[in-house]
Amino acid sequence: MIITSRIVLAVTVLFLVLQANSVAALTRVASSESDEGSVTPLSWNFEKYEAPFTRQAKSASAGVAGPLVYPNGDFSFPLLQPLAFDSECDCYSLMLKRGTSGLELVNFWRARTGFYRSGNGPYLELENLDSLKSVTALNGTRFLFSEVGNGEWRCVSIHDSLGNYLLIDYRADGLIGRIRDSLARTATPIYDEGRMISLTQSWSTPKGRKARTTGVQ
Image (tube, rainbow, N blue to C red):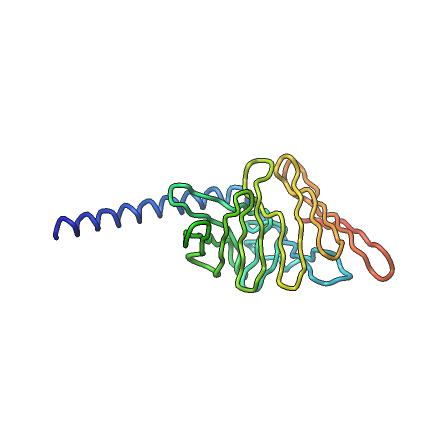
């Protein structure tokens, strides 16, 4: 009986160590593409006759979140953040932003074959669809991830429960090439040595099509 208890204790400790190491590794991977420096984020706008992205209030941690953000109730999703996977623990990880704080690492643990649930942060469910990974929030918003140019899992579309959607196209080097939405609006990032410096936006109004370029920094 004592030997069995020692074995169970040893296995438990080993699992906790592997879990801690996996989370640390996922943190490094998921944050590897974060922007450096202070950046005023641009948040996706739901209004029909306005630019697809509007400028948010500047915050000290905005540069960590990335310049393009999708608001979703109790959290925001920086579009530049990749979905990371660790085969050792069979778990996923994703960086999200809550309130005015910095990025928060959300871990997904296996619930059953092909399905995972967040173990911390906002409640999210992840479904492994092989070539796609689907992350669904409680309000029905669905984030689809696919492998892009550099082999990372990046968000390629966002669909909410009202039928609105956001489509994200990537360049061969893995950077966002164009963003389109259900209102026929477009946003095209402009880069300097791989860093997004501005965003050219186009949208329709009752008086015709409008366009403008907004500096990110």
